[in-house]
Length: 172
Image (cartoon, rainbow, N blue to C red; front, side):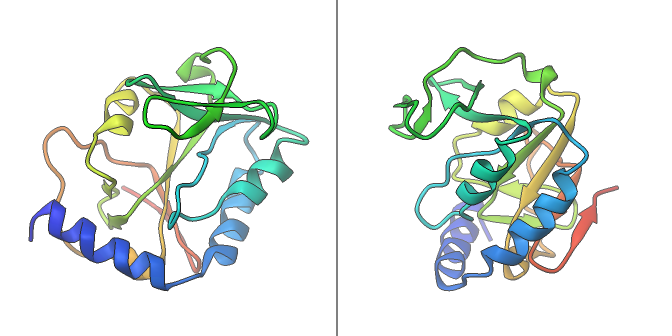
């Protein structure tokens, strides 16, 4: 099955299920040991991490993606301090941060496989920047979107952890 077909199939599944609370609880526990964290401003249908952004930003430095069209991360100062990026996604209106100052990056996924590879929207934005990154990478996905299918390609970047509503998987 092609990536495009997989993507379409799992976008439908993701829209039907709403198990976000379990993922957010597991993610919050996992992120507790880090001080500088990159999350993302969710698109419709993605796991809604906004409550986590708001609570973690009280005690930690939170960064969010900004595309122009290359992906970078900017420090989050509040949802009222946002602008639209190249793709029209709301992003912080601040300066780019050094990617390797960020301790952990949380990355949304349409689906993931047990090998640690994620299926995104097909633009490759995360893969390009993660090729330079030395810290911890975490993909979050619903259990029903964690699959035993090999779909990765040469340019895809393997993530360190997968977090679902029921498990935290360290990828070997």
